[in-house]
Length: 178
Image (cartoon, rainbow, N blue to C red; front, side):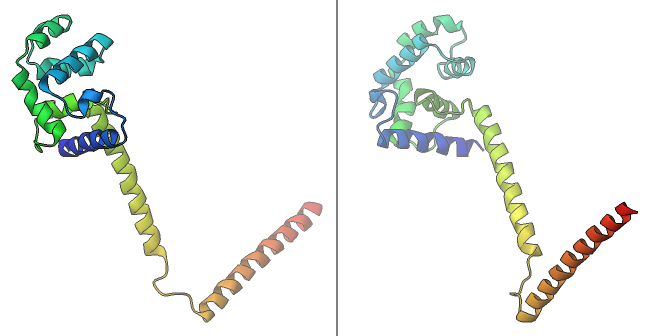
């Protein structure tokens, strides 16, 4: 399931890049220093609790979130290379944390992964039900096209139903008069 999330995040990045919709120009060809500075900027702007947890994991920091910016400033720039390589398409199989960090950088929605997965499963369930309903309908349709005689039978059946409906209405009116 995470593979699908990874593909969705990467696809969203490429689409935003192609359409000129990346939230930061530095994301087109980021350097490790650019990535560090973007995370510092995001922290200053404020992040959701889930994004904060992702950053703490990525930066392997056990202290308070409020002090994370100091840790990031001192963080070895080489450790941003896996994220940079994933963004540039050099790496095709990144760690989960790298994918989640890109999701934060491009403001991929829905996020975090758990929320995306729940939405994906719900949508998948609806699509499966629609397919099953369509298959049921197709199974109930006649396998051969209607012939002239079967068309006549259908018309005669409809005429009979209409006649019975009219008769029952007339009978109800007469009964109501008595």
